[in-house]
Image (cartoon, rainbow, N blue to C red; front, side):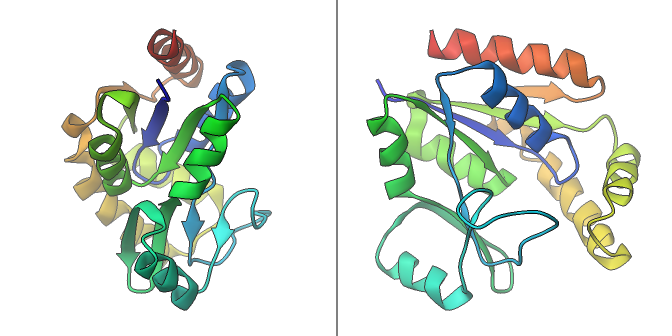
Length: 186
C-alpha cells in the first residue's frame, strides 16, 4: 500500500525542522513539493522548496483538477498539492511526506484515509511561537501579528490529526516523530 506522512502546524512550531530531520534519518521518505503563489522567502528555490506559481497559473491547475488538495490561505495566496507529485514519489517506491498548513493537513488526511499518518506539531505556547517567528527574522511585524492570530485558530484543528507532538524540546520531538513514522511505515 502506498503511504503518506502529513505534517501540519501553526507557522513557527518547528514543523519544517522536524520534516527535514525525518527526511535525513528515514530513507524511505521523499518530500512532496507543494505549489504556492506567495513569493520565495530567504533562500527558497523554485521546484526545491515550492513550485512557485502566479495566482492565474494556480487557478488554471484548479480548473484542470490537478490538486489532491489546495487552499486559498489569504487572498490570492494559494497552497496546494499536485496529484502528479504524489504519483511521481509513489512510482519511486517511496513514502510521501507533506509539510502543509493545518487545513491542508486535514484535507489530505480525509483524501488518503488509512494510507496517511497525520502529525500535528504543537508549539509549547503562543508566546513561544511569537518569539520564534520574531527570531526567524523573515517577516515584518504585521505579518507576524497575522500569523499569531491565525495560529490560535489553527490550534483548534489539532484533534483532527492522528497524533499531536508538542515541540517544547527539539531532540525529544525528533525522536518521537521518528518512532511514529517508522512504526507507521513498517
